[in-house]
Length: 350
Image 1 (cartoon, rainbow, N blue to C red):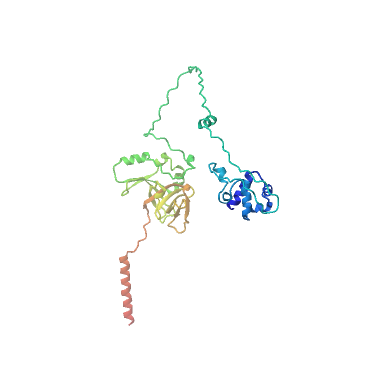
Image 2 (cartoon, rainbow, N blue to C red):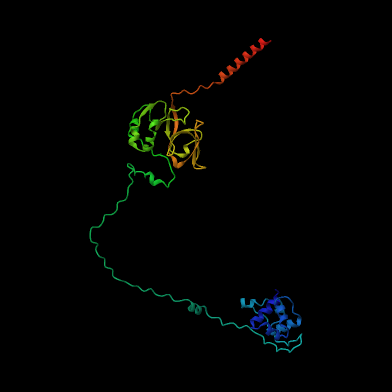
């Protein structure tokens, strides 16, 4: 919309006139006045003079100044023209010219008077005092609570296994040296004492593998050339390449110490004691893939919750000797002998 259309509409509403009333005042049709206010038509010079005279302003102010700012900016002074005779462009009675309107402003008031009107005085504080009678407490005064000191010599026992079901399952990594192990560590020799579990006692071991008195009474033997550590041996079953062998392993305390392609003895809730080649998928899938040297034994995808203990196989004792593997020198020797024999057969044919 244009400035003149906004001014016409603004001044008409400011004077409290409807379109019909103002159209009669300047002797035009209401539809034409609506077209002026909606900027669908431009008023001619005659109608501009009549509207400016009705509002008491000049035509120049009606065309160029946005009179709506008068309400937003009271300091804006608009030059008001004197009353001029109104000419009529259409037939009708000539209305009397409107008197010029001069804006009136209230007398400015001192700032102190305004502050007294809106700022409430601060209420004084009323002090209330009351005597408090303290009554003596009957009975003995309880002694002050002593600060708790940590006893590192005798730490608190760990939580039972049934209270740790909501945590990440871990296998038995709290192996404590038994009386048997303590006596072994005191002897200064290079032979490592190894406790072992026979094949026919594995079910009993599953029920008592955390019982110190049971572990102390396990049968044992000594082996040379083993690094210092905590060892346990298990009799292998059909899942090992040499059934009946004694598998000597050292205890594994961390899931991530289980390496791909290495052989371990696993103590499982579901399968019992098995010897397998491990593939660690704990980071990606949360389980261990257990394979066997025996092709007839199926692979196992074992979740962590099923693992009780893990022992890395460091040595094995077997009554079966591994099949001899031919060396490269022996293979080259056999090839040379075959070539000599073939040469002799060719000479005989000739």
